[in-house]
Amino acid sequence: MTTARALSWGTRIKRTSDGRLGTVTNSVQTETLFDLPAPKAPPSIQPVKPTKPKRKRTVHASVPAAPPTTVPDELIRDADWVVVSSSGGKDSQAMLAHVARRARALGMLGKVVVVHADLGRVEWKGTRELAEEQARLAGIRRFEVVQSVGADLLERVILRFQKLKAKAEREAEERGEDPATVDVAPAWPSSAARWCTSGEKRGPIWTLYTRLARELSHLGRPVRILACIGQRAAESDNRAKLAPVEIDRSASNGKRHVTTWRPIHGWSDADVWREIARSGLPYHEAYDWGNRRLSCVFCVLGCNSDLVNGARRVPELAAAYAETELTVGADFKDGLSMREIIRRAEALEKELGPASQPPAGTAMAGYVGKSTTALYLGRLRALRGGLDLAA
Image 1 (cartoon, rainbow, N blue to C red):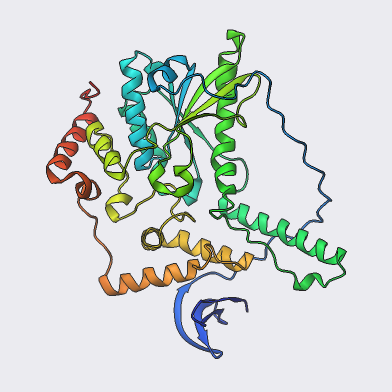
Image 2 (cartoon, rainbow, N blue to C red):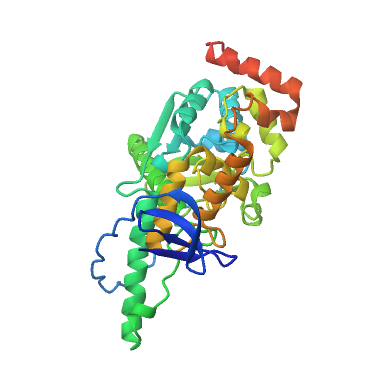
């Protein structure tokens, strides 16, 4: 029998003899929350070799310290490739439409590439297909999909836990302490440790940069890549501090120079929705369900309502997250376990019943009004019907 961590109000989660998970107060089961299979024993932890000191990374001498320009049209003209990173979410597609329109006006739409980092089972269903459709309807012919090799996000959490546990136990032994009593650092991603972004998105996208640079190796100079990212200052204090244009020195080398451009950095939510309405590009139905963010169903940066919404729509994935919590002995999000998210989702289902699909355009109408939303839905039908509205 496995006992989970205590909930914030003093109630514990405990697995019963029939494999069901319930709340327990004073060792008496009071309520069944949801069913989960008995947790699998994690793979055996291999002895960890002492880590070598990390080599200091040097930046190639040819990489500039600052971009030659910050003017959008000049950035596009100067680039050999314009790579638009698309999660399929509203910010990505608004940026995509904006960049595609500018590139088309310059006669340079052919150098635009859209890349989607496929996150597998942890992202909303249909996200990859939607990102591809958005690119195609925007007139961009090249759509690339990249994906991390090997374990997916939840499997990486378990592997990370094993490594952290082995490290903590080894250090305890070196101090002469009992390794069984050590505290293990959190294995889940967090706002302070977003290793998921580097491992699941940034790293795979860099492999695309390598291929693009190789395709233009005949130029005899470092290939200039303009990396477009849909980050906005309004999302967080940290993103507000980001520069709209900067050299990505970590992604650059002697064969490619990467300039990061955040085309919609100063945009508000209303600006984003107005651009989507103008473009006619389809957005994910999760926004009509009430989501504020999109990509991973359960993002550590997502608001609580998004997480509960995800548990209502994708309960099997929520159960997999809860099972991983038991394996690594830590909550998915600091102060909020997936078990509690599932409990809230089940409470809403019991109170309101299964939710019906909201009308298309529900999310947009809250920002641009019903009349503009109606025009958008007409543009979307026309685009999907083959009518070119890009002009």
